Image (cartoon, rainbow, N blue to C red; front, side):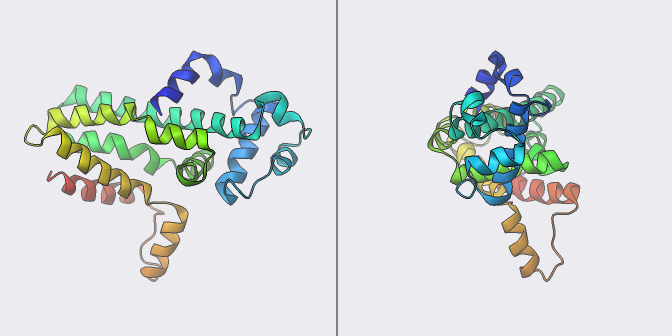
Length: 219
């Protein structure tokens, strides 16, 4: 996702500011919300333009195709997520480069605490993109590892007792835990626990995730 951030930093983010009260901004937010709720395959161009209250041809005018609109949403939101992670990682390593737990927290905190309505929607969109997104989105997810490499580098400094390959394996498993936290996952957890286990307290959820993932690194 690092490459997506570089593209946006070059000027494209301002061209599709999701907060702007413009036809293009409304298309962005409408597509994001509909797909977060229904999934990529269930949402048509007509659904998006109707929700955005714009002409049916507006997607082609502003983005070229529906898939390019979805790619733009992914780039903006992935960049936003990774900027937050990078800022937290810098703060953690500047404070104590040997604090592996703080490094791991920098990785998992942003997606766990995106609790405002807009961020919940953005996170659900990103979660769906992993398995449902158009080919261009899934290719970025598959091949772009620059933002994760930063965490590998930091953990290698913090955990000199672990070989780099072992750190990569453990980080891979940690990301698997993090990605298994969709609304459907928590609905199943609610049934399994008879309503006792919910993600409503996000700070408590962050603590549980951090404890579990840290244990995987023996810290």
